Length: 94
Image (cartoon, rainbow, N blue to C red):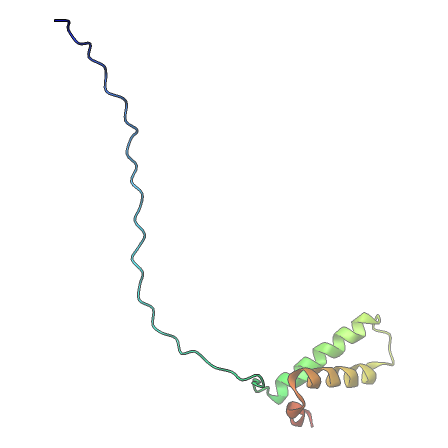
């Protein structure tokens, strides 16, 4: 009988450990707020004034801060802000 030649075992790739994903933590259920189509946040008079002042500033900046249009800028900014936040908030600026 002929002697069998021994073959070396095929080289195995080193085993790498894949980290297991952390178990999911149970999350506290957050209450879902349901808002209607007409839901609006309350805006204080001070917040409305700041929004108007900022809008008036950007109007003045757009035209190069040329003097003589300050009141016009304010009135247009006020109309824009009140339109955006809703007319029911206009009582804050009076």
